[in-house]
Image 1 (cartoon, rainbow, N blue to C red):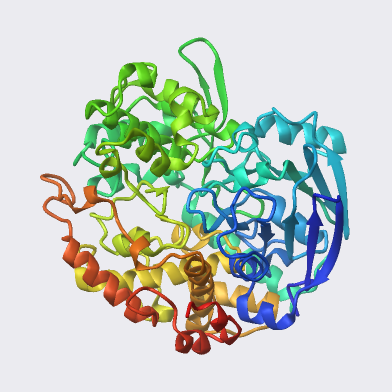
Image 2 (image 1 turned 90 degrees about the vertical axis):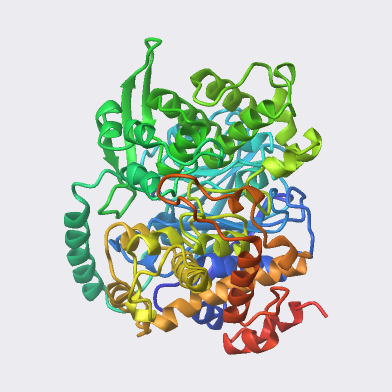
Length: 619
């Protein structure tokens, strides 16, 4: 099948062995790759309710067909799939950088990690081969240091490695997986799963060419798209450029979700000031015409220097507006601390806000926290981020995420939390876009803007190829469920084909243009609706895994705070009632073809060609 090797690499860390296995062509045609393929493996090969940090859990990396093309824009994406330590059930995350195309050239479409190494280990995957390496000398290094050391060991600066920092080593539930210190599979705790297996890094390099349907046509298409997409974004300033606009419509979190407006603060930390103050340069991934990541270079107030990845919008939201901190230097330092430790800035920033509010509500004392915390305070941010990353002091409370911390704190702490399935909300307020109430509640890995970005649709992204021709009313209860369906199916599809969705939602590639590119790789001529079906299949498989672990409608909830409307600003007076939320949820389940308890039906699975998975529906 064009665009695929039809092979996965299965690595057993316990006995330091590996083997190549066939991936059925029928599975690739049904699932496309990436997250859907990984979820299929996880569903079939792990028992229900397996402990995420146990040796029995599996860690799966997968790419799609487009990594086989040399210059396909946005093909640096890769997905990691596992049972996550926060939700206790399905999780996937995605990163970019330059690893995915090299892994493909090494001769594989997916990687399955099993067991647990006796001592710290890293692996090197090259042309149809896997080498096991001693990582004792790497253990304790941060994510940036680890990447540099592996390049030194292998004697080639071109070789990229996925790795964990110190957060993953200590099984911090917010730990992520970084690609060469450049990009991060940031949410859900995959880095902790990697750490639980004593696996420090996965380097990949290959020289093989996977056959595609029409290489000449693909090269011509890619060249034209690069020019179009680069021209459309050459003056763009990355994700920080949306800070002011998101705050204006009421989409950004403020004062840990209790504030309404923060206009001046958003202007202070957003662009163009962000670009000027942090001396920004674009930081593109491999085969990227956009360069949304920001490379910063600043002199610090204490005389030091900070050079590296700058904070993205989500970090500006959770550590900036969410904490009422307008100090770009402080946010950048906290961001760098998280990047080096390898931890999710969204959850870490959210934990800081939660701690401050618990203190203000007399649920935590200054003695317990280690200081008197305040919103808008630089020292509060830096002190608490340090404790949270190290699982020390107040950070010890969060070893099981924010739900675990709330349970230990007691009192009304649970009502202060803002999470779904133990995953903290991203920097998009669903009261500004009602579709995100449905999306967050039903997202398999927990509250997520990257598995259904309703805010992008509400601010202008349409998909005419599947029937979404007009921007829906962002405050409409009646339109929320359908908006969530469109957004989720699109996002899941991107993560099956493993393309960076910014090619579409940021640079303006249309689904029709993407289909043209896919056809040059795979030789398959899909319609837009057929392409989105891959996303729907992936979502249903993820839902089945969660259902098998005991999840259903009772887990599709939203935080109590989010039923409180703003008094002023871009979402003034706007928030659904709990009854309206349940109405939206009912409509969503109906559109999905699920039961009223949110369980996929046999009829729906048959419709999607997933008959073999009916056995996972609980009796």
